[in-house]
Length: 77
Image 1: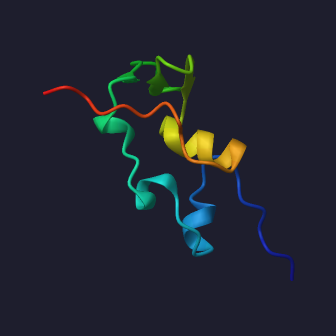
Image 2: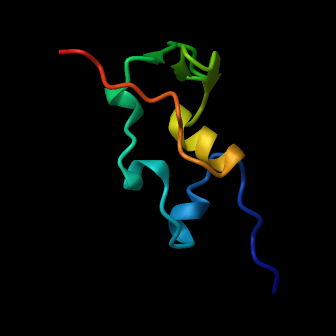
């Protein structure tokens, strides 16, 4: 029997025991470049990198580049 192929947006890395950027301490919701787009297809965005996605931007950066997001900057209180 074949294993199901994970679809884009699935939490496959967590299921495999790999840590995501959320586990490593980068939280987009606390970054000054993070914003909510109000687009149901791509609800999250990063102003610094200039993109919108279905997943948190730090997760996309980590998945695509293999490194943590270097644009993270904490929000000023």
